[in-house]
Image (cartoon, rainbow, N blue to C red):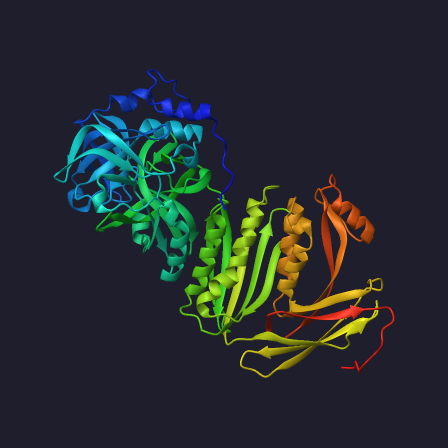
Length: 625
């Protein structure tokens, strides 16, 4: 789910787009001086300059740049400078993912940041994001989905360029990472450089799950070894500088997940980098860190840097279409999460991490960290039972607590079955449109035991085919445990004394499914209109246990919900009038009476049986159990 995004008026977008062309733009406080960087219209073909980046360790090195041309209006308000790079072995590797943000200067003035690459070219042809647009878009908090085109844009060149022995009079510029992948025969096609996402302490399975969630953002999750204690100590005072590695952390602690790119420019405490978005988050709060480059990983298409974060030096607060930007000297506000995992009855292991609080990312990050915590235990049994407890502490109000037993699925499906509910709760708490709910801390404990303790509902028998209002409905439920003998469980339910005569269904199911039925029957919970309704629905679901067998009888409409308020226990005539009124907007509430019985198994399946309610019934058989 995407986080709400600040609105950018058309006038602000116009200001951002024209900033590079105004003859005498008025600099904002602490803004770069216009004379320190090139305007797009002043950059000419044939100009030569140099770029700066890190190829190994933290040492900033210099490569050469030759301007091939300017691509105008690759998206509204944006241009791209086409250039050929050389030196530092780029003739062999091509433009490298992780070079994003590498500053390019001509005659000592900043042109912009290396941000695009020709994926299938043998020559290192790069697209440079003009710095004037990096700065102006950050100041306007421009949103990528507002300013960018939805499809690749083909831009003609006033003077054809010769690359790789071929002449090109146009360039296609991809607008995002989810565009159709270009082929070698598609000509000169510039794609944004992807961001290497170094994952330290993550298993291949966890990275595979993460890749599915992040591919559209242009992230390349890969296993990284992390910087050793010796390197961290030696480089602890390495300053952040243009051309140096710039890391952005998503998860830190016992597991580490961070993207790596390059610093483009520093103005006072203001830092600009990458030349393209990280995840198009707009306003954000992410740890800004120095970085260390371990090696260059060569590929047939775009090679990439393998790097690790070193230390936090500030906060990234803007992630827009032209770059990321942040402030030095600030501390990020992170969410702590503790995970205890035991495979068997031993003490197990404890993992502690901190995650960014970005609403659109937090559910995925929590799910990834939890999945990785059990993946660290190795391959799970094909048949397993998991005892899981989660405690989500809120700054206001009581915590949300899950304490349940899971079984009846293979080890490969365990992460989704166990942890998807946690991710869903985090999403609902942080992304509800009514009030921002701040999570203080998340604690989870998982115990995995071999063997399966699930049981299917096979059949249901009632003590009688008819009951009088106020009588006790008695049901015999026959469960079939996995690879076990059929078992009988008795459940009884006292019917309301004022239950109308008629035909009814007795439904047998597990408590979690019963809770979902209760929510569907309550308009205020199924379509919440307040944060109180959101929390109430979550607590109803999390209090339910899969080991409880539930006998449920729907008693029909008993009230209405209107404007976020519930009016239960109304006469049937009043429910009919209110729910059918054109002006009331009332929705019918469905009532049910419920009884539950604990079992030794995780209950699966559902069955129902019909019975009648009559004030004068005849007993036709022995109803004793």
